[in-house]
Image (tube, rainbow, N blue to C red; front, top):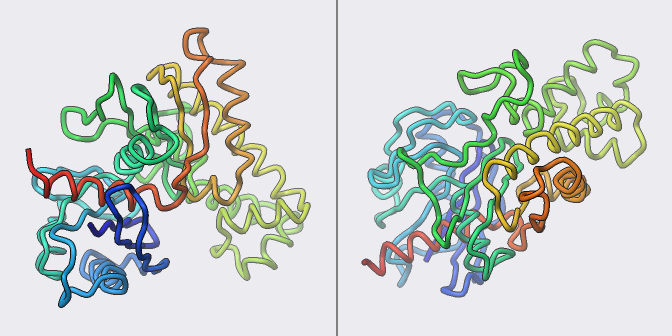
Length: 315
């Protein structure tokens, strides 16, 4: 099956075997987030780079997207970081590629992949926490991947961690994602540099301009010893700890799997989260095992292929 992972800034595709092995990978394609038509062209380019539609190919494609979705209709209901509402992604992509397309939330896809093929194999209760441009998650409880009344369970990036805090891309303020997601880190860094340019010289030099400063810029300067980057990383660690403690108290998983691009860029976030859970969670929750995603940035891609395979197999 072909799995696709569509994020706020990138798309990757891969042919995935039944055991979760990636047989062929498209590499990372950066899209310009210029509306559904342009993004779908980038998705199709990525898919075709590792799959020839003229040859024998997958009977179905799965696409994981950073959005609230209706998987029965293949519709993206709300993708704050893409700026989409009510986009029939499955139908549009199926028309472009000539293959049926299943649509799933990216964090739910990653949770499924880690449960079936990664760090969560054998677990009956786990929570997957995805730390990337945005923050999301999904839960397996009693051996079942939860969905929610409108297929949107696990939107933990939009839990309030600071009352009356920073505006989020959703209708709320003070969200976990607005402080510890990739875009939130970038915004906090840009504001700090505008407020005190002398302290932000290293970030400016690396990025080339205030608006170009990203979470990755902050991480690179942190490793280089820059004081402002160090302060921003420290603040991010506190926000991550606050969010993770609330999630583990609420869902009581036996296993918390932490993955996404921010973890790839800053692996130290995982032990910070684990230490907070041990010291700050309610006693029944504090013993949760904490693991880094084994599938890494390919988790959502693999999960999307798993969903496509299950649908193709039928009831």
